[in-house]
Length: 376
Image 1: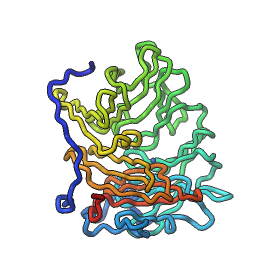
Image 2: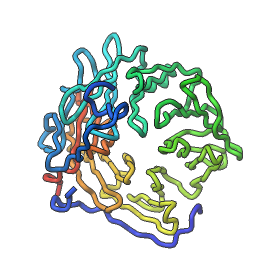
Image 3: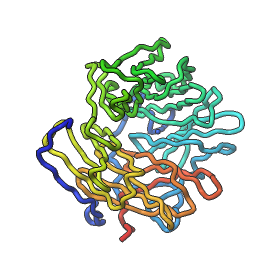
Image 4: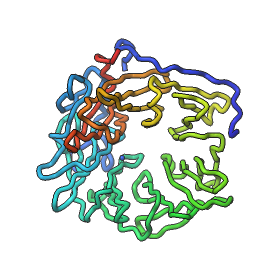
């Protein structure tokens, strides 16, 4: 075992009543904070004054479809990602001739900025943001990375000379981390020079590492490690050249700040939460539905987002892990299929990317703090 466990707390996830919820640039945009100081500080919206510009989906008052305002004429939405701060999302949209990166404010209901991408992208290209809200597009088929340059206010394109099997971008967006097939090293690519160096090589025999996540320090990685004798998760510090294997875990592992969250065959419908700051304490967090673990997203806080498909639609749930409660749950109508979701942490909403019965893409915003219509 990796750690000795002295105490176990079991937290059952329960529904929080409405009375108890007090609580992947230029111009006047939410991202302009990267190039200039904010002139004024404004408080984050509460559940009572939060505005989302969109049309309600079905009978759900907390779920809004923002596709119409987000989509440019002649373009289709290929991918979206939420910004950590503010009320903006970023969308990758394509036409018959080019691709654009769109910044959209979900409160104002308008396109704040649009940036032309000066290269041809494949169908597999997707958009994401770094820990400090630097948007980037990664095309693993063409080995191209497009990163927004806040200093020059342009999109910088990098044609990679390697074929990565896993890929991450640093917080500032000026370095890339990647691994290669049948190679045990973690590499770092410097955008200013175009050079790569190996920043971590395991001491033990290993034939492949897959990058899952990098922390804000750009040094701590969650990886999947394949050695033959051990195939599982590990935490790697490149600077210290240290690896901590989760050799007692037989399920999925998530890293959310100081917390390690993992599933195990020993605990049905439950995840285990450990924290390096409290190594003698382990928490079990139980879900409502035994299928939620199949579609679990973990966010810093930590918070959980899950979805379960059913005959009447897709049930989505949002949990506050620290409080041990389910904040809200609703059902997305059955004519929509949820593809993925992303957390707008500052705006405290969930951005959903769905397809309708005809295969058309829709972007929806779920105000999970609106608990006026929680399913009983």
